[in-house]
Image (cartoon, rainbow, N blue to C red; front, side, top):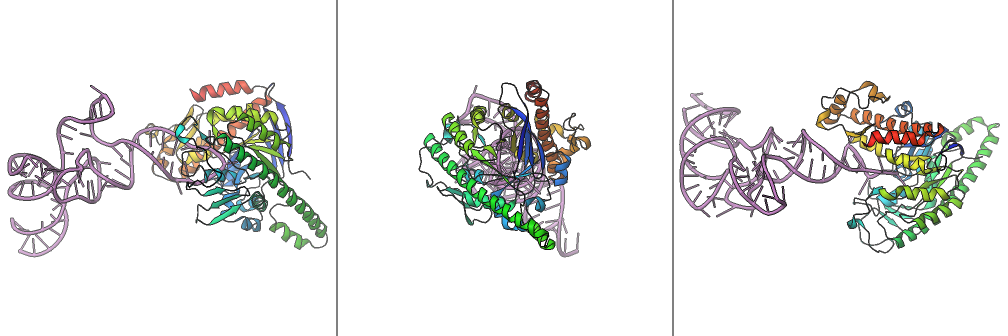
Amino acid sequence: MKAIDFKIEKKIPNFLGRAGILSTPHGDIGTPSFVVVGTKGTVKSLTTEQLKELGTPIVLANTYHLYLQPGDELIKEAGGLHKFMNWDGPIMTDSGGFQVFSLGVAYGKEISKVVSVTDPSLLIPERSTAEDGIPRLATIGNDGVSFRSHIDGSLHYITPEKSIEIQHNLGADIIFAFDECTSPTENERYQDEALSRTHAWAKRSLIEHKKREKEKASQNYSNSSRFTLKGSDTDKNLNNSAALFPQALFGIVQGGRSEELRRKSAKIIGEMDFDGYGIGGSFAKEDMSTAVKWVNEILPEEKPRHLLGIGEPEDLFMGVENGVDFFDCVAPTRIARNGSLFTKNGKINILNTKFIKDFNNIDNRCECYTCKNYTKAYLSHLFRAKEMLGATLASIHNVYFITNLVKQIRQSILDNKFFEFKEEFLEEYEK
RNA sequence: GCGUCGGUACUCAAGUGGUCAACGAGGGCAGACUGUAAAUCUGCUGACUUCGGUCUUCGGAAGUUCGAAUCUUCCCCGGCGCA
């Protein structure tokens, strides 16, 4: 039984881009698609009903965060993440690989998902693999990563096998291999070293996943054979088992800024039997498009690709053009909570003085609940008064904006109008 | 009326002779945010500036002093107590 099924419907002629359909145990998703981030099993400030209403196809939760709180065992006991968070659509979980980075080298620094490598002060000099005396919450070893919990300081050790175990307990439709996300400021020698680790971890993740899928399949078989004998027991088992449906595993390509390493990684990961692929790493803005292109030229065409953690409007066009099927990004929800809103003419900050008496909606062409019912003046008031409804209304708008933008991009591919749509949108957005 | 405590920037509030254009908090103004340590973080918030400084400020006025938000005198305003 296959976990997912991916069909390409239409390609952008002479480019890597395509539109398709991904079928999962919790429904079909038209691609390209935007995955809304709900790290701790909640898209901050939104209910799942609101998500559904604004057209969110799929959400991404995080292994590391849910493992620490409330614990993956508890979520398994609750009947899996879908049931626990009341979301019956598809779910992905990230492996914790990004936390290796954000709680490791990036800890306490101004290094994030997209950085300016032109700043020499950020460059990391030659160093040994793990111990260099820099305070951080994650320390990398070859076998796995030691994390110090950001919640209570307790020590945890995550290996590829552990990450997969947690992700099976959570029970998302699509899970990710445990990887090491590196900073583009790392030197080439370190990138190479980290890449070998990521590849070894990918293999181990895959083996652990297959083992567990096999166990699950036989368990399901015995459950279904018992079903005819003892129905009530089976119901109980079903309730207590997170994922009786098969889960898909995506491998992650790394390689930093180097073309050689990126291509090498795409080849090695692409040859492993994953259900799809993630493209990871912290990028320098200027080499994001080339990195994506190098990788997608090599990855198997018939499998879905996910550009991890990227999602500004310009990046979405770039990614789609270069063969990306899925994006996820915290930007829409995070910037919403901080008062920034997407509009067709670029981002605005609702806290700016000029919006205090602006009785228009955020974007006159937007069909979201917030735009249909509220003015910028009201949003301005909510943010100034620090009322939590502000975060909700802003998040509804931003998630709708990005989700809808990717849907429009998808439609433009189906209509053979991708580049027209891109030009039209960006011209207005960036002016 | 007497006594007493107080009056500091938009607000609250430190400071009680030089290191004070004046701590801190709030507010205000702007900026950042890309697999969420994030309802968070950063900068600015007397005026002018060639960014080195220059000028005007701590209820008002007059003093003491090389030097005052800080000490003295008087005045104005407020709280409290006693008449």
